[in-house]
Length: 112
Length: 113
Image (cartoon, rainbow over all chains, first blue to last red; front, side):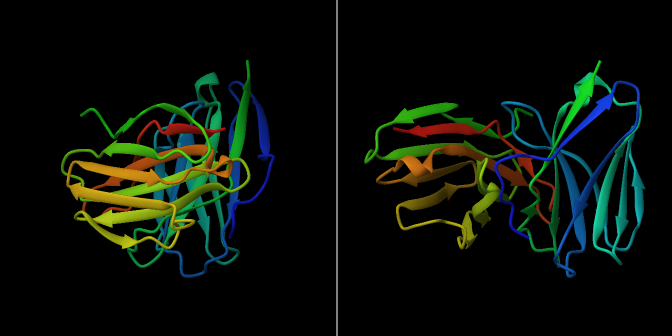
């Protein structure tokens, strides 16, 4: 859907705890999903991706879960660190088409 | 690899002036994307190129916006004439062939007064 809004959803997490960032998508034809991290003053940076034929994928300290039934995506960050503070975007595309659509983003604040 | 390089990093101009933003994609990447980011609308795709050819420019807001990619290592996004509502951060990104993973530059912060 459209990414509109003045205020980003914010998630505050204590350092060392696990973080879960959620994303809902509307296009049921979407078959490839990506999570990006954007630090202040920088461009978005790839974190992890997942194809629609999977429901879970793990990286280093990060896990992405995909629930196609309810069109929901989540990013789990284990043992959250101050360096994880950033805005996190989910993005999706379909049919190998390179037109990637970004969600509104979630701001993660890590409390030391 | 130096990554995607954008210039300038900051641009302040007056309404009505022409603005040119520049991008050098990662060597070997064959797709290039221009995005605009604002608080109101988030990240919006403006246009993207495959092998220097514009594929989808449906996101370009108006005829005042134009983009070119004269060769595989350079692209420009031009706004003429610029307006205050064009103020935003403009990102360029590139990706390898057959890969949806985008590599973003650091962006150009544009302020139109």
